[in-house]
Structures are given as structure tokens and as C-alpha cells.
Length: 160
Image (cartoon, rainbow, N blue to C red; front, side, top):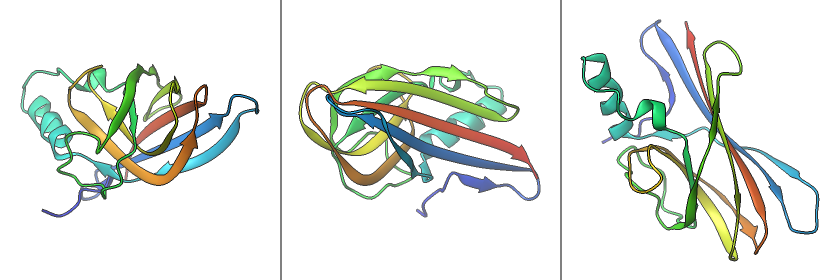
């Protein structure tokens, strides 16, 4: 199956664009902006969930895509992903906002209790388990005990 990139255009109807950005604060340093880390893959299960809603099914997940997870997996992103490669520590509940028309944003900060090379992020529908909406893989970010990473996931939907 081909990858499903989340820069999506259906005819001339709509354009979807996702961005994962981050900033980091090491224990003895100030915040550093890491910029956009990924604009990649939405999962097949998230797309199937949206189609189900459009066909009158239950809207059980879309309002809940606010749980941020990070990990050390390095396998390439795939539309068939249902989990992170190697999820570490607990997930964080993001604050959801609508900063302007057509934009959904969720922001969460995680303080690490161990040392890792964080190389992936996922946006999920639940604190444990749940549907993986988007998985991003990027150049590893070294963290130690007390390092904070603030994750910002932005979804922009515009008419064409």
C-alpha cells in the first residue's frame, strides 16, 4: 500500500496539512526552538475513522486526538502504523486550540525521567492504546533526566 501523506488534496475541494514542531529545554539551559520536525504521515486507521464519521458512524476519536507520545523507534513512517516503534515514558495530554479558521492545534510538554535519543512522535486518541492519528520520525533528539520537550501538532484544513 502506498504511503498516505497528510498534505492531502481531494480534487479542488480541500487541502490538509500537518506539522509537528518542537522546542527543547535542557535542565540548565533556556528553551531552544527545534522548528518543524515533520510534515508526514496520517494513518490509515485515522482516515477510516473519519470516513466512518462522514457515513454517520460514531465520532469517538476525533475530539480525543490530543495525547502526545514519544519514542526511540527509527523505522520509516507508514500509513499502516498503529503504534510508535519504541514508545518511552508516559503520554501527555495536549491543550487543544483553534488559533484561527481552519487550524487545529494541540500542544503538550513532556519532562523526561530518563536519557533517550528521541526520534519519533505520535498523536493518539487515548492515554493508553487508542488510535494513532499521525506518526513522525525525525533526526534523534538527545534528552537526559529533566529535559523538557514541548510538542506542537498543527493541522490546517483549507478550501482550494
